[in-house]
Structures are given as C-alpha cells and as structure tokens.
Image 1 (cartoon, helix red, strand yellow):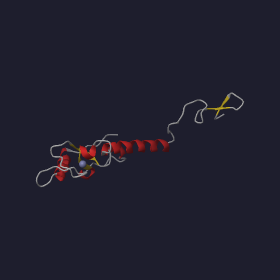
Image 2 (cartoon, rainbow, N blue to C red):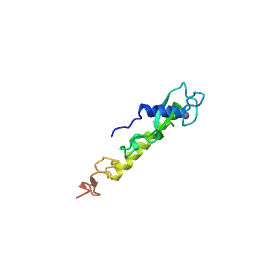
Image 3 (cartoon, rainbow, N blue to C red):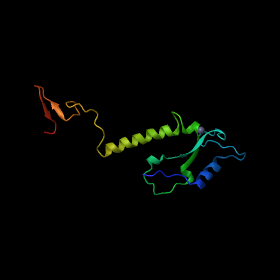
Length: 125
Ligand SMILES: [Zn+2]
C-alpha cells in the first residue's frame, strides 16, 4: 500500500507549529532546540500500521522530531519497526500461516512421526 506523505503546505504548517516566537525550531518530542540540527517530520502512527489510508493526512498526524527522538536505538523509528514486525507476526498467526518452528522431518513440528520400534509414519495419515 502506498505511503501517504505530507503536502508541502502541511510540512510548512508543522514546521510553523514547532517554531518558537524567537524563531527556534524545537523537537516536538523533547523540546530540544533542533534549529541547526537534523530533524524530520514523523508520522505519529507509522504508515505501515495504518489500516485505512483513504483518509488524507492532517498536520495532527505529523510531528517534527529531531534525531534525538526519531533515530537511534530508542528512537521513534526503531520503535515503529518493532511495532510493525509485531503486527505482521500477529496477522500471520491470525490467518494461520505462522512460520513452523522446525523443519526436521521427525521433529514435533515436522510432517513425520518416528515410531518407537523404528521407522516413521506421516502425521496426517
Ligand atoms: Zn527530541
């Protein structure tokens, strides 16, 4: 599905919202002064987690975040990646195609069952 992006007007409005009266740009996560630092406009709810993308984005869906809050191990992006992976696993389980843990032929999850006296039978037989 397509990732929705903010329009130039919306980006402008978000930047304006994060700018103080004395023209400093503050991170909307931790209020750090990021005027001369790198910052990005974050999707508050990661696009990959949004189910209904027919609704257009508003500036409430965006947050100006410095690299202080957006990047790094505990940054928003890292957390989003975890949340996305988790929701994918949940979805896979729901639809019944969660990964089998093992592919050894006679392991508990394998297609064959070892007989005590030797030999193997198909589990679904
Ligand atoms: Zn920050």
